[in-house]
Image: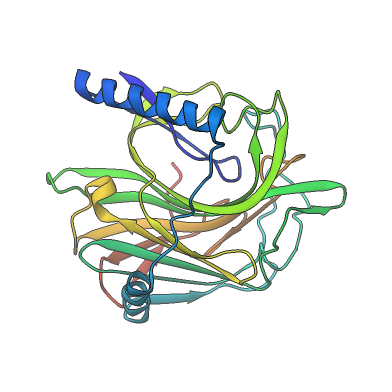
Length: 293
C-alpha cells in the first residue's frame, strides 16, 4: 500500500491510499524519476488544466440546465475557538475581501462530468494579497459528498475540490510549513477523493483510499468566479444517480487554518451548509439540515 499526496490549495488537502500492482508501482517510480529530472534539469512547469472551447460549451450547457443558488453577502461563519491539527486556529473575525465572499453557486451534470461554478462578490486577485498583516495563500471551493452511488452499486462518500493557490510549500508536502513558502504565479487545480478510511495523517486529516487530480478548470485570477468539471469516473459515480452534498468556500492564510469560511445554504454557526439532495443532470434540488449526531 502506498500513500499518494494530492495538490493542496488552501490547507484543506487530503491524502489518498491506493493498492497498486507491481507494474503500477514501477510505472509510478519511473514517472517520479522523470519528474525529478525535469525539475533538476529543465525546471518543473505546472500546466493548468483549462477547459477548451468545446469543453466550456458542454459545461455551460450543463450549468444552464442545472441548479443555481444565491448566497447572501458577508455571511461568513464565526468558527468556534480552538486549534486545528496544524497548530493554527480559525479566524474569529473572517476577512471580508469580496472575492472570498460567495455570491452564487451553480451546478449541473451530464453523463461524464459534474460541473460546479462559484461566483463571488469581487474579482480574484492576480497575485497573493496581504491583509491585516496576514498573507492569503489560496481560496478553494469544496463539494463535501455525504452520499453517492458507485458504479458497483455500493454507497460511498468523498469530496470534490477546486482551488486557486498563490504559494507553493518548500517542505516535503503541501502542508509542511517548516521550510516556508514560495510565492508563485497563481494556478488552478482540482482534486477528487472518496472512500474514507479510519486512518489519519500527521496533520490530522482523514486518509482516503480513492483519489484523482483529473478534471478541468475555468475562471480564476482577473475574474469573479471559479469553475470546474469533475469526471464522474474519478470516483466511480453512477451517472444520473442521486447524490447528497454540501458546498462551501474557504481561504487559508499564513496566520489562520481558515481565514474565512462561507458555506452555501448556511444555518446557525456550522462550518458547513445544508445538505443538498440532487439527481445528477436535474434542474431541481431539495435541502435538509444535517444531523451532526
